Length: 147
Image (cartoon, rainbow, N blue to C red; front, top):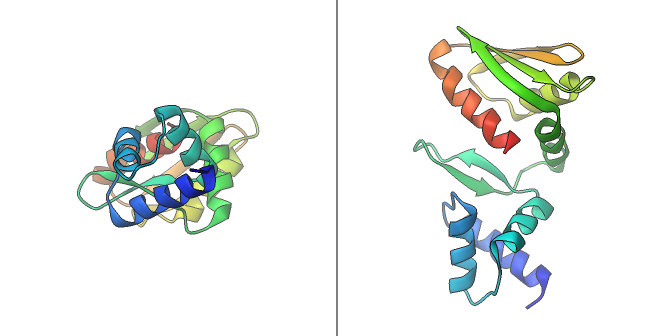
């Protein structure tokens, strides 16, 4: 079976199932008759630009992003963000030099309802949250974008 057929099946699987891990995705592919390895699944996820989003049950799942622009911004975020910290309702993200504006653009683009907005400098950007109780969840979403 070709790479295109495998990736098409992979997209069908994530559309009809809440797949949280690469292992679950690999098992679903194998049970559908597709030969693959964890490394193959990892490459497919990257090539397809799949991202993880919350399924509303404190778990996440793989999805195909609605906007291709988000794939590029996610890559920038992943490669730029070095450190995340917070105080009260403020999240501070340190990036490589020159990376803060592009990384903060992803946060603005994904429009998390609990985020009021961002302010970016050269290598640091600030995320202002509506409620400090939501900060740990938002930081987890950011960490998933980095991983």
